[in-house]
Image (cartoon, rainbow, N blue to C red; front, top):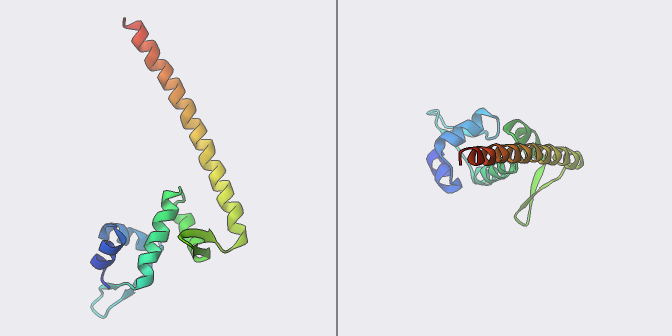
Length: 120
């Protein structure tokens, strides 16, 4: 299938698919005329990519872990044991970042409350 068909079926733009290719996440074959050609497996690959990105995994890490991810009843599961520890580290990093953002939000709320009080 051509890029437009994959984009439609995967629910993404053709620009997104080109970006995934640039990042090494998709590897379409090329037709004699240079057009990209995708297979059925690429629809699922895009779903996997989107799932990882939505989970906070960056494209570099996604490129590394995709070969070790398998589908298990609608969930992506790491087939390589060392990935679990890597995902746990990433989860901790995200939790730490959330805590930082919550702290910043609390501080900002205090500033806003003080400003409202001062202008009464």
